[in-house]
Image (cartoon, rainbow, N blue to C red; front, side, top):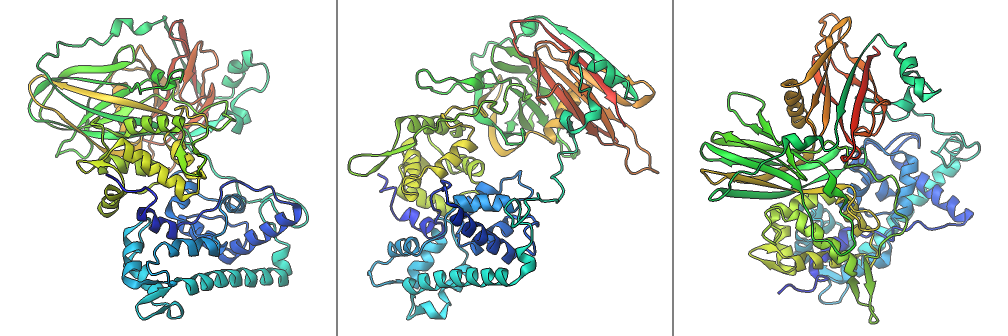
Amino acid sequence: MASNPGSDAALGTQISMHLGSPRVKKLSLTEQEVFYMNCRAAYLTIFKSSLENIISKDQLYLALQHAGRNPSQKTINKYWTPQTAKLNFDDFCIILSKEEPTSKAELLKSFKQLDVNDDGSILHSDLYKYLTKRGEKMTQEEVNAVINLADVNADGKFDYIKFCELYMTTSEQCLKTTLERLEADRKLRRQQFGSHMEGSPERDQSPAPKQSPRIIRKDDQETFANKGDTSHSLLSTTRKFKTSVSFTITMSANSNQDSKLTEPNLKDWQCAQSKGCFFLEEDGEVISHQYKMHIPQRSVLYLTIKPLNLSQIEGKCSPWLSVDTALYILKENEDQAEPQLMCFTELQNREVFGWTGELGPGIYWLIPSTTGCRLRKEIKPVTEEAQLVYRDETGELFLTSEFRSTLSEIFEVIDLDGNGLISLEEYNFFELRTSGEKCDEDAWAVCRENFDTKKNELTKQGFMDLHLMEANDREGDPLDLWVTLHSMGYNKALQLTEACPFIINIYAEKCKPKIKAVHMEACSGQLERAICKSVLDRSDAKVMDGYENIIVHTCNYDTWITSIIENKTYNFLQSDDKVIIHINNELSKNCVNNRGLNIFAVEVAPRSTMVCQHVMPLNEQQEWIYYCVYSLIS
């Protein structure tokens, strides 16, 4: 049986990480002034001006330390995601308003749990063991630096009471020194500090962040679209372009009925299976698991992918079940740098997409894909937040039934092999998604010691207890739990709205196939090349009049339409032969595209091909008309 989740497994974390309540306090004006003075003082300890940006995790960590915080790696990852390029002074102030300073009482409380003799000290051997084996592990050099502090170490013991006093005194003195320097330097006092400045509230004049060069939105370029009558916008804008081509495709209701997937007789066929998930990022990019498949001998295969229908509580919606899914199969070849596209699951039967055919022996990449037409950011944010934890009359903390149900869903999603247990590999996919880090063998051993496991894998009860421990570490504050939930695609009402779990089945007639998840990456790069190849093999291509090197390819897959743009231009005398193509979908009917815009523009590099858009019907029960004009701007 597992021990108490609040036991020593959390002690290292409690020492290295002490975050206060994430709630933003409503401060009086005087308190606000003091708060922003302290923010400025910490910021200007690292930077020459508050107009400079934080451009790395290390800078953020250092700035938070100078502000009296003691951030863990999980806290850093919460504010510096893979999509973060920089943070400005305003962002820094917001972070500090959510992360309260480490107090002396909190530090003492954490160290006291390791004080077995209750004498205000910890043996160096014990301190080394806890700091390198528990929670966010420190390196040997970092622990030695603590042990070698002369003022707080003697006779093989670490005097944590003196250490806490030294830590607080040093932090206070650093802040005091910086504030005095600010007070004495009129130039610094007159600087513009983000949005929180002395005197005139002028905005930061630093350049605005650049958008991706691939997409130029309608609002960004007034010349791209007529601001007047939308019924005439197509005609009026076309006159401004060098040349244009258009495509019209009329699709009947339930247009995929002639290309339905037919399941072969699978009696005596061998099967391999794995689950996975599409995750929608803040910028609209989709992240998913990627797999390798091993086929030991030539065989006919039947591959399918479909959204995973989780066990739902009564009345809870499952919006992800309408999300389209696909699986691209690429073969590894020793004599080729890039895997070769073999096929993809084009045929459909309701929510199942599949492919049947023969493949030779070898290793294959399986790249899941979704068009993004139906996996979209929520338009109406949920205002009422679900309760995750509660205390009984004795003050003991418990997870609510709604939260337990949601954790049960998450457990089912991350249990990739479907055996009812979570292995270290499966857990690491979950950790990478929610915290950006992996759990090593030592940390997993600690997890097995303190939570319910079976065959060295975490049970569902152990998974629940792990999150209860996290709630206890924060004294019932659910901030970190919400970070996990949002990372997994759940909104404040505990609805799965920004993720789509799926399941892959591989049936082989003559051999035992194997499948293993190997990555969790953005659905781009290798996938985009595979999509472009599949479209080029069967598309309706149109050349831009007068610009023979600019070609628009459109492919009708019955269930959806994909267009790609090919730029064959290359002039060795001119380094930049990129082109900008304006796309107008305003006259399409009953359609939705993955861009979320009827009018936009894309930039296509020389000698390259890019996916321009995917289009699907809003309502499959009605006719839909794809009418799109592609115009060359430059």
